[in-house]
Image (cartoon, rainbow, N blue to C red; front, top):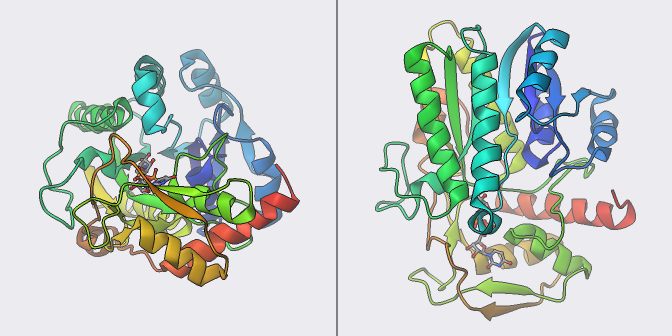
Length: 340
Ligand code: WQD
């Protein structure tokens, strides 16, 4: 079984990807520094897959530790690099923390594995598009100036990866541009685990529905959209996780060479108010919300063109908004009875 290094493998998308890697016959090795994840996720994963995955705790910014890791795990054939800070708002307050962590970890991986026959999947983001001129947004859309240091780290990382391919430092790279990952594994044993007050919409909805939060504030209803609230392309985290397996398969098919990028969305856009309604329909639980002021840095509307992912990555999202909402709710209910 091909051994795959999963950095940030105890995080939201990382943990779901570990499950799909095992379902697909891969052998994941998790590296996580636990700066934005919980060690209990290892136990949760073992309840799903039947064994505790191999886990190393260290910071990828520590190159010496990474070199020691390569000696302990010499036969890594692929890397899926999730480990990064991702709070847009915090990145504006602490840009140096974001540039250091998100770029040093990537540079360490590329230099330690330079020249080795390792396939590399990079966790990128639709934030690189900013507010696209045309919708749905394709992978060829112009990259707009980043609206945050977080988004800038993703843009810079994509450039670094392209240059690493050109120089021969990296063999094969696929960058996956995520839209809005939501939902949880159907076991309700893993899901999104925001630390503190949720920044993202769906965990705020589920925490309001369970009574942890008083109400959801809809950040703006005066946008030029069908109901005035922002539009996003929400995608089930399990669909997203499966795309990482598809990326490894594409790079291993013997003909793939170099660098490519794919949108990971559903191709559909929903407004904030539609997501609240979808949650209420899927769960039968009313959500208390109010309209508030716009949040700075938000783009008005973005959803992905997923033609290339379907035709070339041979992947498409299958789970609908109803399952995204119901699975997120089942996970929130699980957490309320089993605090992690
Ligand atoms: C979605 C919509 C808010 C909270 C996320 C990640 C980012 C990147 C892209 C990976 C927006 C509105 C939110 C709330 C609200 N992912 N909202 N009330 O901003 O699209 O970015 O996906 O790289 O890292 O953060 O997601 O869930 O924060 O917001 O009205 O309490 O919901 O204005 O329109 P966003 P989000």
